Image (cartoon, rainbow, N blue to C red; front, side, top):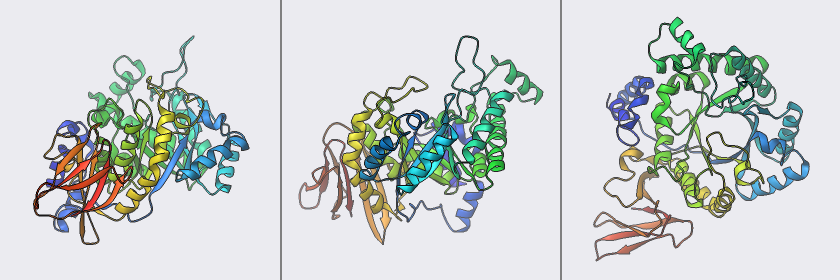
Length: 444
């Protein structure tokens, strides 16, 4: 049970207790104990995939012509993007099936793996003279029918479809329909009602509806980064991931989040929690500087993601980034795209270096252990050797004092060779100096 107790304190000590309701991971703990100790966290020994999503707006505009797709393909190839996620529905807008198939076939012919994406928002009838709310009232039969229709439609075009992170509920006593259903089911707790309802929605209107149209379809549920509120808003990651077979996690931290390493910790935690079924991390360029955007990319890889999804073409490359549901700003997204282009070769090197590596300890325990400098520490073992990754999350040069008497050999420095260096403070006291937002990998 040690692993379970540790899980209670994961990711910004204590705050994750709100999601423990669903951590029915005693089975995983029992298996680990049977093998003699805690389960190991090993990064998958396979090539890392860089992918990009394309929202409804870009599929209907920039990408709906051969010329537009050609421009996109040129950028994708220059930036290690080998896989695309084409969205068929979002915010009451859809890409018609014929165009979706045309774009799918064109990108596949160009050598890309192509999958589908659905964002389940604005599925209720709009009020008179207004718009439907972004967050859906899921007890509405019309909303359920519309999602089932979109799931089936996407399944006819794609074999793999990711469901963006709006598969939750915020209805409460103000919603007469949900209030009545909750009372009928004799559930006192709104969190429990929402969790049970969302599992029914996931199974009936997504998985079953999709499989009727395409028996081979594979749906993926994507979770938002706001893990503190998963439980009360209807997310049950252990049960839902069993249902879907795979989950993803949002690794965006953005400028306002003081916990820079959260994306890394969430990525690792979800993979452990779901028995290795967390397939990738998803981050975007909303409300963040180019440095923060690159930092998100690095932490997604350090967290062990098998795939990094850059969300999205619309924000980073389109003339019109489209609307955002909660007023987030994409005003610096083109600068983020330029920063990604400068960094992506290094990201690929970092991912390849970590391929098959075993993580030392849990990221949330060691990331900022023993320092308040804004430098995160990540230990790995690979091929019988010990490696350390240091990442400076600040705008200033930072130092890190290393263990006395150890030798150090620099392996990788990002964004360039001058980003980090090992110095000697006396004959036995090596230290690491990191430039602002620099990353250094060294062997000890």
